[in-house]
Amino acid sequence: MIEFRIDRRSGVAAYLQLVNQTKQALRLGLLRPGDRLPTAKEVMTATAMNPNTVLKAYRELEREGLVEGRRGLGTFVVRTLGRAGTGDDGPLRDGLAAWLAGAEAAGLEREDVEALVKAVLDEHYRT
Image (tube, rainbow, N blue to C red):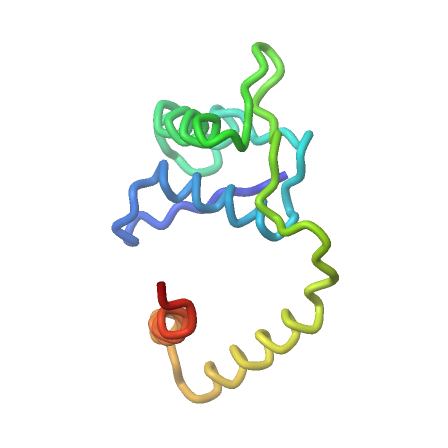
């Protein structure tokens, strides 16, 4: 089951953080069709956020066709965002972990790494 983490200093609305974290878990295969998301009460307890905020995130995910609420049962994943036919991402993950270790050894903070990665992504994936 997914564990949500809310960064109140990020400037991103809490409900969007939940939506984005769910989409990331779907892309990485951590959530699959049939999996149940935590209840609003469980998320509220873990993150100290308003249950209406959680419900807003779940409604957005439902609107996008990723989850569906089942009365009395919870909210379930109905569609993945993972690419079909992708293999094990182990070698890529290992390479990225090694790169991150090098960035940390070079004195880069998390925010520096995020900025660098975003800049390179923007260059690589120009629209």
